[in-house]
Image (tube, rainbow, N blue to C red; front, side, top):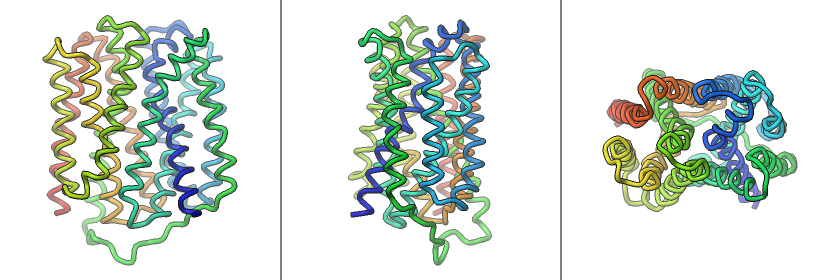
Length: 375
């Protein structure tokens, strides 16, 4: 019963974590207007958040091995709430950069902590649990644009959406305080030989870096892409929701799918779907952006949880290693999304699908290499 309660807490917490991660993209135009900045200028906020991700993951990699996991999660959640409350009061780009640095550092700590708590709680049975955890994360990403639109329906601006999210996140420090933290237990034996662990882990980190860059670039820029292609701001914001609808549906389907299809084959299939979605965005101007967003979401859906579960099955993921995974997540969230704004400014909006095609091809090459190393 205690396992069920903690599992439910982590999954509900990941709805908030996903919403914090996904709120920047659909509110980008709102934030630009808030501080009177251009789209190219406001893109620096992606870099600030990603650098926050890296710093937060580096600190978390040490803290989760030293503190009780729930205590550190409580501290990070309190800082997330403070950051969300303050964003609508931003009066300059500098203030906005500082707040999204804080949100990046704290959200990635919640993300890393949730993954580790679930892994340490369920151990070798974690595969389906971590997929459900990331389903909840994508649910948060999917819901947050609707929360922003709902704020406008209430006669407010998108700032109200930030406060509604902060209000939801407020329940989790209390829930975590009442529940015991799971503990890390080292594996009795490693599947990957000690001599190959370093190179195998680095290859794994490379795929994570590329994948996160791909997903965050889509989630962060597809709304702006829609606006630049002539869509209304609210219609464009909801494109992020359609992307995460596809992503959530794919994660939901992956749970029964993995019962009869090898994980390796699933990953190849998901990468192929992502490639098709990226190519269609570039070539098929008569296809609805909603359909393309759904297809891209389906392709992205279970890549991260499958990779995380697979890595945990062949090597121990303590706080330090899991922290390094999320450092690479931060680097991935920094490089590609931060470069996308200047690329669009230099080569026009049609360069956005090209960025996605290049990223998904690199993911495919990296997964192929990692697959050969571990089979």
